Image (cartoon, rainbow, N blue to C red; front, side, top):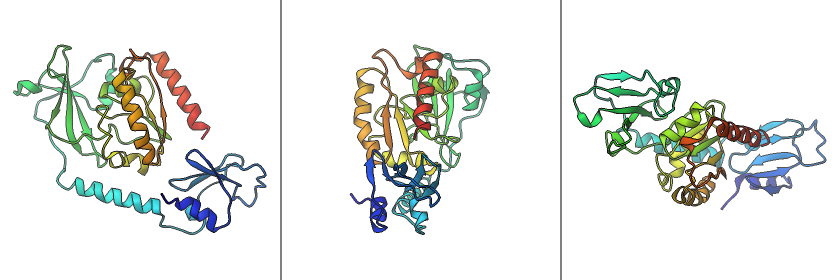
Length: 289
């Protein structure tokens, strides 16, 4: 596989050593006498940062290259996404929506309102007795509604309206995030978000990213996010899914780390103390990069 960043460094006679997802070399800041190489260049995007003097740049722009293999690739993915969305102009839920006014399954009313949760009194019985979430795409258009039955004995527990719609990761937009935590289900995401871990998204199952991972995660790349933490359920299916997904995400040029839970744990049941510890650990990892 070609490495345009390394090729550019070699063309300009800049020696570099490989370190994970980065190339490491002497700082390109002319005012910095970098005797101990501390200049890291992302192998995928060319984004560069000196951890000694703080100098930041993009290696392609630094050498006057405005169109990079990376930017061309992203442009093609955006075009593909636009083509897929030609016939997906958003859907509307049946009338008689009722806003959520109290917590549900330990999730605060504030968080439920943040994600526009509602119930319905529509005449269609299969849509009743559920808490619904509008799932929006990058254009902020609703592509599908995901509803969870409000009774533990309700069947099916989850229902999509309309059925057969391809689910994205949810949510897709993050503010000032350096990384994203991926979990299995929507209530896994809601529990973590409710307890203060805001850069979290659900994948709606363990196998939804095995195909077209690059396209489904396009929103992360466009927001400059290149690191993913996987935190699926601690049971065997969840752990096997993470093992299978890790190399797929790495092939998409993401730096990947797994957060392994105990066998009986899942993100939807984690306590405030546990979520706080995960948040602190992630912040420490992100700030060191």
